[in-house]
Length: 458
Image 1 (cartoon, rainbow, N blue to C red):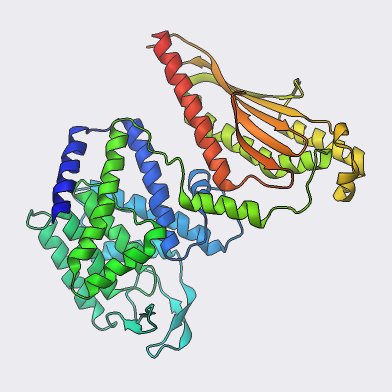
Image 2: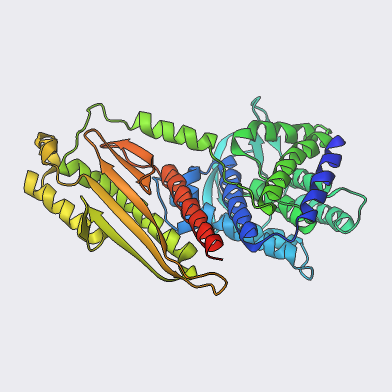
């Protein structure tokens, strides 16, 4: 297939750029970890958004109204992904059936009850065991309504042994292209469906282990492309294995192109994401208030407490953790209406005091207060980095400023007084996706300023 030529050419280009700089390697893996975890889980029905997944992985914070199991699945997938990465880097550690059972144990966390269907299509419930091959038949209802039966529990051990023999035979030879080996392993694993649950995620992890082992980047199947993914698997079921190999190959090409960009130091962050755009649109339209709210102390306090304070804390924590070790000192300062306040807690208390003074601790009459009497109009948060440590450059101080504006009908937040990044009507919350995007802009701005200062001081 022609796709092999394209992949081989891209692989050669990537190899010529290796070893990758640590910073580029780290940011590439961070993106891969987020994207693969989100899309692989989302394909299987996980309800966390891209932004919520990012915040959970990066900051360990659970946001959104979801079942606890959805949060646990995200964290477990990260552990499993890190595990296959370490395994692929270790030439002494073999990939075995025990490895696969352990991966299943990791991603499923603990036994649980799940809705299922019987062999004749009747609804039922079954206890899902972790890290063990299935003890009862499993099946899936196809789009045409038919029930597709996977390998029986009795057949599974022998079929898994046969699959692992296929892997061992070809992992160290050149008879089978790594793309073909990885894709065929994925397809045959799904046909067996050895576990009660988690088979899709394990199939994708095992496929990506093979690619990593052979020096390729991981393949990410985008969840919006689930229909084409399942169609390619169905074609392979019908005997056209090349269709699935080619499907996986197209996504491997994207991963190689992304890795090449990272190796060149180019931008790999996506400026837009369809899922992100849809989620933001839904939040704005579905949750929008019919009544226009104006600037009052209550509305300012709610905007600060529900959206601005979490955003500010997120940016401060991330920039401190990411860049603080480069400088002797990191500190923050808050200016409200141009006057200094000791910190965020003091600001919250002051805003709350204004609310209590206006409406006697009740937000019910908030809109009876004239917006002209609203106390807070601007908040400026300065994040300062003092004393660049490196002996290779002259010491310098630098910083970034977050700017919040409370206008008559909306509140806005920007960076360094140059441009507004987020603007919301009173009563609207800043979504996790928007917080993540704002954080990336703040981080990129800080990083570029540090690099510029270092270059000019040499």
